[in-house]
Image (tube, rainbow over all chains, first blue to last red; front, side):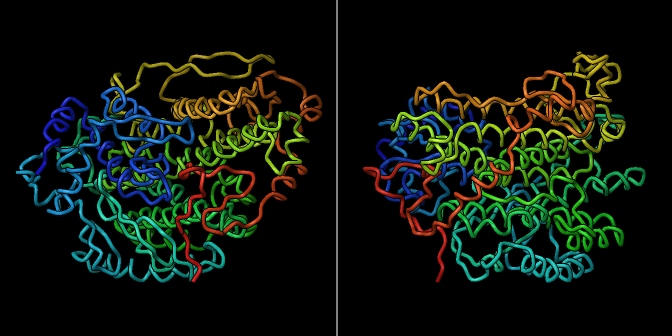
Length: 119
Length: 483
């Protein structure tokens, strides 16, 4: 049962679409990124940037939007930042698990805000 | 466009010999021609691709869709078995020509006869840079600073190969026999070959070491990005769609360059602070790249890349624009009339021994404008780099040299200008050149640091890891398998 998802999706509704798309990539890399060992709940720019088609400048601009919306926190300093989901943002984990179980693209929900598959 | 059609155009068909999303199987003659070119491409890769790598399994990204949001899968693959293919972003039937004399017309799905020659030249020149960089970098695997970096090198290499495919598809599909001949010639030219060199001078230089490689991917690949971005605006829609997807792949190449230099800076600044050393000789004695050497490499690579944008004043560039073939960077976001008939652009020149600002017709200054857009983006990245010495409380900052420094093409060719923009005599410049540009001994020193590191989790002394592991344990993901 998705208990925390509705609040997160509501919050994502006020975030511009490009930032939502980046958030989706971050969620995927936090839970499934290729660099190990890393602290739980962390994604790195190295993992994120190879998984999306964003320019570095665009990446940092969108990251700032997500930070201002309190969906992520950024620890460390350039070039070794560590991106973590906030407690609000970490609700994405249950959406990610649900999407994997039901074979629903995570982008449809987190970026496209399509909740029909979550019923 | 129906949703079903849109989805079909996004998805790439990997069941075919040549993966593609352009319905290649519907054009048997084209498919056959490209299937005949394919083994010659593989021969080229075998002959001039990364040396000694045909059996390595590399953790690579492969495009599965042209939707930027979910476009790649990752997995281990032997590079000769990489599925190079033809990927265009979906066609928008409502797309228009957005600039120039044909502004407002429906975007062209075939090559207009009057622009055939210039389009072919543009596509061939762009296409030629792709295999060139692979050839320039083919020996770097033997001195990689880590498996992580080795894998990134190979990722860039295979994608440059894919960009060659992108241009060759356009040549075959839209330029008939001439296009097929150009496709063959692209496989025959060789970087640095005295008899059959690559078209642009910079692409005939060797990439001798990893510092040069990171500088190349940061500075020179980025010229490629801006050229692609200008071509992504093209009224010739297949070229636009091709370039738009290439930009998705190119973005990570930019990151490889920027983060590579940042990690070198990080490592050097860290040790300088920890050991309280600042003299370049002391820094070098630690087996690190000193900051002054880094600055000289920046001066070189930035200045030679500026020449790739061509002369500031160019009637060719004006023709490309008015014909609707090549636009400005982010053309559709600009708020002018996209005609430039009476617009002016301010650029710098040398007159009577002085550096002056000149206002010229904007149509003639399109190369200068694209170069200035490029410099703005470069400067933003340099500003990010400079956070590193700042956080280590070091006074050093990387600074881009003046745009007139060390130039061989355009308004500043033939002039001798310091890194700060001071005009001087040739004699005075020659005396000081070693302060501003890498010397032979600089190259020898950097080369001396290059030793192969392929133990999982380990990084060469002169470069930081791309992230911290838990409790500073080494990162241990095996990006390249040697079995």
